Image 1 (cartoon, rainbow, N blue to C red):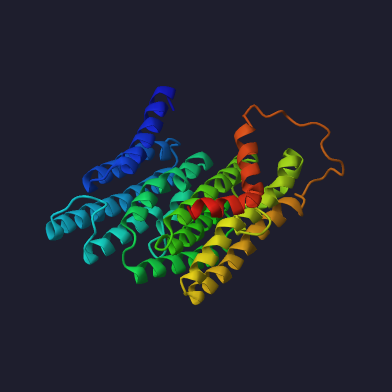
Image 2 (image 1 turned 60 degrees about the horizontal axis):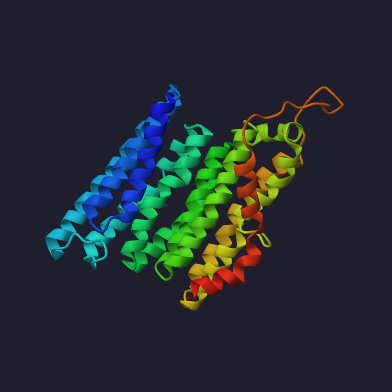
Length: 348
């Protein structure tokens, strides 16, 4: 793609999300979401491949449906209450519609069916943008309309954690594994969002570097299936050794960074006297942990079939910068000691 066009599209992506962040009017927020959607579509379809075109079409249809529902819900709310202000209390009916529309935008279960299919058709870089940056604007809007229908939010959260766990178990495609991982993590964030928005934001902030690291590792190894990971020990031995830590951090295993948000979310849910929801969320994390362990096993404990008994004595030097991956991998593995400081900040 032409660098000039690419820079315009990336700036438009940033503009759309920033516009949604800064808006206090529903129409302005809707415009920001639309700018983001329209900016990422050329990035998704830049590889003229039938799968990429199919993924782009699916993404456009679902995002257009969600945007139409947001516009309809905000208009209905303005008609009932006479207010377009986001911070103004929403009427129950449009609030429920908005929640479902934003859930569709983010890919929360049970309206998640587009996400694994779309992510599977994209290259890893565009998939990374879709899994992280594109979630920010609807996530912030969801934070702003809280608290709304508590039963609906709990249903979305619990369903997402379970679907994210069950869905990833049988996958051999790494992009689909990451899609279900994204659904599960968003489920955790939505569960706690109705009680503590700062905690949901903390979970998102920790989720982004973990997902960035995972996508970058797969991109460095040029791997899109679990089986091709077996050859990664010969390409990047140091990275192969670090990868299980990042994957287990995504699974929420102590003493890694991913444990901190899950621990705090379970604590908050228990404080709010909903131990059953907390138990279901904790058990669903075991399902997710299984498929992260499976990917770790395929990458570090299996050897790809080859005819040579000796390892290759040389490797081609990579031309890509590894600094962003090094920083995000460090964040993914070593933030847990900051938990007391984070708790103190959240209680301010």
